[in-house]
Length: 201
Image (cartoon, rainbow, N blue to C red):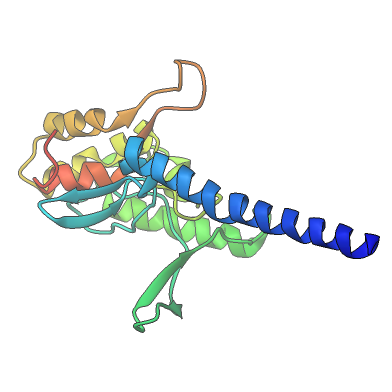
């Protein structure tokens, strides 16, 4: 009888904790986030006139001459699909050794491509974040130096002047946290939406 009594208490405790931790807690935290941090809880999506242009925290690959280019990305759109069969993008960082010949060849190829697209920059060193992937492979931001490297090319392929391009870049540049932590960074997607006349703020 004592054993059954203890088993009953254990089962009751399990059910109560399952209800609290598996139902109540998720509902409360989700409701709190949706009520007070709705934009952040939904991925900080950039939605303009009903069109979703993506999350400001997830990088997108831009290769057009009239756009700001971000960091190189490793994206697989063929291996995974959703329930409707639509391709899902899966990003990751390269696992190639930074000291290996294969990775060195990749870097050399990227540098050559960037220099070819920016002949006006001459022998100016290519910013490292334009040739290396981030840890996640989906970094949405680049350094101000990497953005400045592209100003002349963007101005030559748009109706914006170089100073106007710099103004747009500065508008979407975030400084160091509390002035001391991290590095200044430019949100590539926001800059490109502004260059396209879509994002105005």
